[in-house]
Image (cartoon, rainbow, N blue to C red; front, side):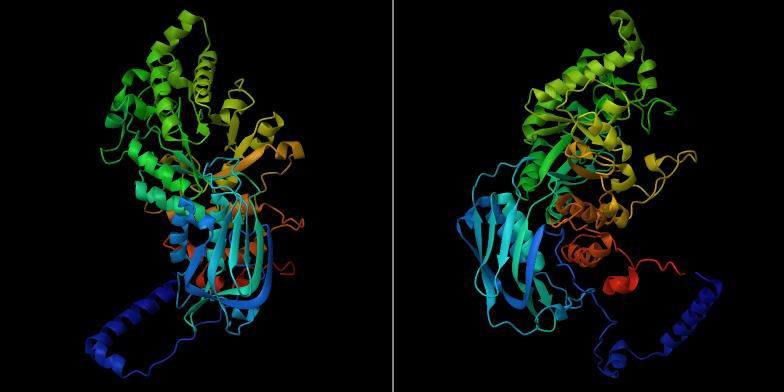
Amino acid sequence: MHAGLSLSLCVAAVALTTVTAQAPSAEAYSSSLPIQKIQGIPAVNPVSQPWIWPLPQNWERGSNTLKVSKSIRFEGKGARQPIVSKAIKRYQNLMFKKEDYPMIPYNWSTTDNTPSRSSLSTVVIDIKTNDDHLDMDTDESYTLTVPVSGKAVIQAETVYGVLHGLETLSQLVQYYPERKSYYIPNTPWKISDFPQYKHRGILLDTSRHYYTVQEIEKLIDTLSWNKLNVFHWHMLDSTSFPYVSKKYPELAAHGAYTPRHVYTAKDIKQIVQFAKERGVRVIPEMEAPGHSTSWGYGIPEIASCLNAQPYFGYTVQPPAGQLNIAHPKTKEVVFGLIDEWAELFPDSFFHAAGDEVVMKCWENDTYITNHLQKTNQTLMQLFENFVLDMEDHVRQKNKTVMVWQEMLLEYHFNLPKDTVIQVWVGSDGVKEVTSKGYKTIVSAQNFWYLDLGFGRPRSNPYPEVQGAGFNHWNRVYSYDMRANLTKAEADLILGAEATMWGELADPNNVEDRLWPRAAAFAERLWSGYENPKGEELISADAIYRLLPWREQLVLRGVRAGPLNQGFCTRNPGDCFQPPNPAK
C-alpha cells in the first residue's frame, strides 16, 4: 500500500469513528434513504462457444430460448437403472441452482429473448446396456438433443455416458433473474460427445494431511462434474500410515497420526462405491519401497534408516525411512497388503510406486549389507528383484501395474512392456518413455503439478532447496503432452493426472489449489487439442467459458479460486487481450 494512501485511510478512519459516535440508529438512518435499484457495472460475455465445460466434441445450436420446468421428469428404461436414477435425483437439484445477482450474467442477447410458449418438462434416457462395469475401456460417449419443443433425449452406450449427458444438460440450463425462471438458450441443441483420452485423473495425497471420507467424496463429486474419471489415491507415505489392515493392524495403530486419522475397509468400500456411481475409478497407490517410514513404526524390522537424524542424505524429505528390501518379513507384509487392496479396489489398475529411493539409506543398513555379501548381489540387483517380485504379485491379482518413471528412466529396470509408466519429473520424460515402447500416464510437474508455487517444495526450511513455479491455469491449459512425439509415441499416451501433493495442502485450502486449474486440465483430457474439424482449441476462447464455469463450481459449493479480478470476470473481453506489439 502507498504511504500517502495509507495515511489518507487512517485519517478517514478517524473521521468515520467520530461521525459514527454521533450518528442516529441504523433503522432511523435506513428509513430516511431513498430506495435505489443497483444496476451494477457492465458485464459482457459474448458466449461465442457454449457455456459447457469441458467443451463437447460436436455441438450444434439454434437461436430459440426454451423454458425449463422445475418439475422436469426423466423417463425411459434407462432412467430406472440404479446408478442413473440416483444421478437424476442429484441433477434435479444441480440443474436449478441459482444466483439472483451473478458475477457473470448470461448474455441473453445471443439468443432469441422472446419467452417460449412451450417448456422442457421431459428428458428421455436411452441406454444400450445396463452393465455398470467401470474400467479404463468403458464407453463414456453420449448424445444429447434438446428440441425447440417436445422431449429432450440422452442416448449412451453405458450408464457412464448418461452421467456425462446429465452433466452437460445441467450446464445448458441458465437462470434468468429478471423472469425468475430457468431457460435453455439457443435451442435446438444437438451434441455428440466423447473423451479424447481414457484416463483423466487427479492424484490426492492423504498421507501428509488427512482427509475425511466426506471430504474425499466432495472431491469425487467435483471430478465428475468436470468429466474426470480417475481418483488416484496416494494413501500411504513416510509421514503416516492411515490404512487399517486386517492382517497387520499394528501398521495403522502406530503409523497413523491418531486413531481418528485412519481409513477402514468400510471407508474404502464406501468411497469406491460413491465414485463408481459418479463414473470415477479409484486407483490405489502403494508407496514402496521408498517413502515408507510410517511402516516401520508398526513393524520396525521391515524398515531401514528409520527416522535417521539428521535426515539429510537418507531421504528426499523427512522423516527418513525405506522398506528393508532384504528382510523376508518385508515381502510378506507387502504381499499381504496387496492381497487386501486387490479386493477393496476393484479397478484393473494398481500403482506400485517405486519413486525417490535414496541408496544411502540401504547402504548404511547392516542387515542389507550383510545380506548382499551372503548372496553375492549388488544393491541394485536386490532392489530390482524386490520391485519385480512386488509387481508380479500385483499381476497375479489380474491388475495392470503402474509405476513412477524412475523405475524405467533412472534405475533402468527390465520392466515388462505391459507396465504403465507415470511421468512426473518433467515433460521430457514423455518422449523418453514412449520412445521405449511403454504406455504412459502424464503428470509433468512443470505443467500439471497443482501443489507447486506456494513455497519451497518438501516443506524444507533450508535455503538451498529451491522453490518451484506456480502452474497458472493458462499454463495448465496450454501444455500439449504430444509435443515432439511421433504418432506411434503419442498413441501410447493413455491419459494424464494432475497432482495435489500434501506438503502444503489440506482440507482447508485444497479446493482453492485444485479448482479451477484442474478444470483447465480436465478439458484438455476430454476435449483434446483440436475439435473434429481440426481447429485448435485455444485458451483465448476457453477463458470465456472457464470464468462462468468457475462461478458455477462456487454455486455448487466448491471453494474454487478466482481467475482474475471481478471486473475481468464480468468483462473478459476487456481484460484478456493479446499484447500490443506497438507498445
